[in-house]
Image (cartoon, rainbow, N blue to C red; front, top):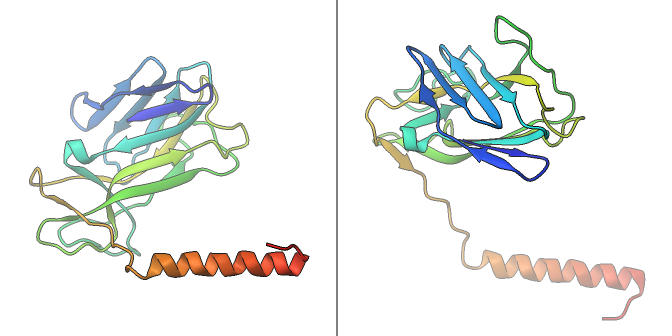
Length: 195
């Protein structure tokens, strides 16, 4: 995981197991703790730096784990359970966190399927949480924020199959360039500007 801050600094660390059903990072600039099931129990993110925390990048692939997103209330990939897409949580159950206003963006990447199953779009290896669009420009120094993002551990390590990106058809790129050129020509003619 990598936390990035408004002053340009960042810190990367791996989650360590702390007893049964608890994983945590206790870094010098940030802390992240998750206890219990990630489907219903929130991650607790704490900003220990002097600058606003603007993003958190999480890559679960090295741990043979995935983010399991909501699939319309149904099980998506065969063999997985119900998923839950990232949401803000108001508390950890025992204490309240900072309620962020503005825009928090959660972007998933690294679409995968479990070997032997077709990909349906509910399992991803990476999540980027962008807090820079919030009113304060991120999570303020000394603040806690809670979010839920469902994660699943694979039953068989190494059972993830990356889904290859779909290549563009060969004629599509020249067509897109031609269309953008026509749009530029039309705009210049409309303004009476010569080429």
